[in-house]
Image (tube, rainbow, N blue to C red; front, top):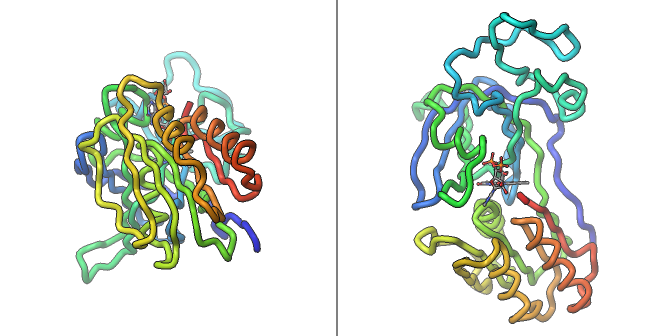
Length: 285
Ligand SMILES: Cc1cc2nc3c(=O)[nH]c(=O)nc-3n(C[C@H](O)[C@H](O)[C@H](O)COP(=O)(O)OP(=O)(O)OC[C@H]3O[C@@H](n4cnc5c(N)ncnc54)[C@H](O)[C@@H]3O)c2cc1C
């Protein structure tokens, strides 16, 4: 039995531009990005995620110009034109070595679909789709960019591979998340073998966001409505009420930090699930 995360062979930032935006359901926008170098992206399925590099300020300012600076160069002095921060950083290590004023903003998202470039199909370059949760409950630069950035806006992405890492012999799984984790859960389920069984719990603020989740027939999906409770509390209560599925071989928890840490504690301490069979990622706090 092995639990191993899949990482890309070469992690390097890929410049992209925003090419389409569509509403999936009341609180989800599907964004499409494209770029000449996007063909180098290696799709891995499941919950494959990437870091999206955005111009600081959300990339909505009209006065940004192409960046001529570098990570170690001298700063932009008073009166000099504002520049687009360096989105050609090769890695997170080079990002942390870059002066804060030169750093792009980073937000994390999950790949929903990837289509290689295919001129015969009318696609000159590859396209990548991702879904962003946008509603009135919160505001942030990632959300603002997703909602308002003009088509053609520049960004860059850094592939981070998959966090979903069930043991090879995994059969019965528990997947729990909120809206931010819905794209990941949908990706995991759509690629799951028909032999998979288990339980999926997704907490939503708006039940009009419920979507069809293609999945193996032995997997039950439960949607919980948030109401006035703290984000994640509904999903946590639902799993506590049901207990871990019998024969659980792997649990995948993603969403608000309080939810994932509370659930992990419940599974490990109260249900006796082995720690290494629980993947938990705070998607936001
Ligand atoms: C591996 C990974 C994959 C992810 N995939 C997706 C994805 O596919 N789609 C997606 O929408 N999100 C996804 N997320 C979550 C997303 O990165 C965060 O929600 C992020 O904080 C959004 O950035 P922002 O600039 O909009 O808000 P921030 O500037 O980060 O936060 C601003 C305010 O909004 C609040 N906030 C942030 N996110 C949420 C939320 N989801 N619900 C309620 N309040 C929130 C914060 O608490 C803060 O008060 C993923 C996160 C990770 C780690």
